[in-house]
Structure formats: structure tokens, C-alpha cells
Length: 280
Image 1 (cartoon, rainbow, N blue to C red):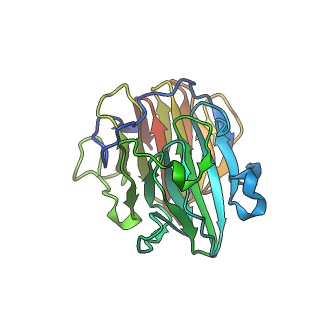
Image 2: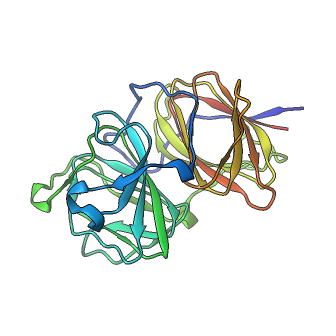
Image 3: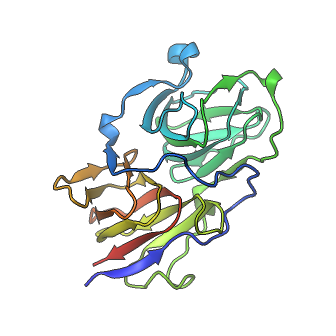
């Protein structure tokens, strides 16, 4: 018997974000991008191979609308001080990343950590792991790199949250998760208003079998840790999604999720409303 264990989105987020997005103009649809099918280019084409590699998951970072993409950094990479024209949010998927003022002490964020970089604020980005990858998303594009002499204060503040500082909620903290499910959630950003856009981490235990039903016009999910088998309703094909993979969900669609028996899975979910998680 399936049990509904979660209806998400009534929460206050970590941090104060003056320009936190409230909605996405483009509705999401049922779609999948596996990590091994990402098409890679340069994050900053003007720097060529001195730039990190980047691959789109959804949207188009060179366009004017919201988008999400992967970025790969070589070991030892360190950017020159710079700014961006738009605020971006990032989740570390692999390796160790540092993102801060050029004079700040290094704070290496491991996989599962979250950060936000405000538009206009000077910073550097560096990588220390053997292999380093992050998921980055912006609310509006295009995503540009500009010199620090064009720096400005847009009212937002940077956020760096180490994986160890995420607050995971479970059955002892919230009523919509049962002890049997062992599902946990960490809220990241967004509004407490039900109809507005927000994001959270969803942690599914090893061996989890269940479904995610999207009840909102916009739902996007990126695998941060582990491997899941994913099957959308009405589709006979099952995708094996490893860290760095993405799936989008159409409104009122249901997606069957199975987690491997030997490792839990962590999924970053960005949704413009509610979704339900059920387990068998």
C-alpha cells in the first residue's frame, strides 16, 4: 500500500534574498537529461580552455530566462576576481569548491553543500578536488562574467552552507514524514507562500521505492548524490540517473523513483508549488 508522506512547500528559507524568484515563466515538462548525455562547452567562451566546462540541463544560460546547468572545474582551478550580472545559486556535486571574496580564507565546500553568489559582488571561485562539479542555476539570463570595476550592491548577500550545516527534518520534526519512510528534507531558499517558487534537498534512503507527484506548474530535480531509477507516468522507459542527472516534471505527472540498495540518494528540487512523495 502506498502512503503519502510529503506535501512540500510551506516554509521559510535559509537567508534573506532580496531578489529571490517567485515563479518561472516557462512551465516544466516531463524530460530527462542523464549525466552522460550532457553536452559540454565553456562557461566563459572568451577564456576558452582556461574557463570551466559547462553543460545545460534545462533552459539556456545565454538566453534571458531561468536556466540550470552543470559546471566542471579542474583541480587547482582559481578564477581571477570577477562579478556576474545575475545572482546564481550552486550545489556542489563532486569535489571541493570555494566561492568568496578574493581575500577571504578558503572554505572548501564538499559535495552536498549550497551557496549563493549575488549579482554585482566581486569574488573568486576555486576548486581543490581531483574532480569538481557543481549544479548552477540562475533566474534570468544571460549569465555573464564581468570585471570587478563594474561591481555593484544589489541588496543580496552571499551564502555559503557546508553540507554539515544543512538542517535535515524527519519524522520527529514534521508531521508529513513517517518513521517508516526515513525520508528527510532540508529547506534552502524561497517563500513560505504556497504558490511561489522555492527549493529544497530531498534525501531518500537506500532501497527506497515510491513516487513523486508534481502538483505545481514548475518542477525541476537534479541528482546530487547516489543513483536512482526514474520512470515517468505513461512512459515505459526507465532511466538510470546518477549524480549530475536531471529530470523535469509536467504538472500533475507522477514519477516512479527507486534508489539503489547500497547508497542513499539526495535530490535538489526546485518547484513552484506543492509535490507529493509516496512510498510503498
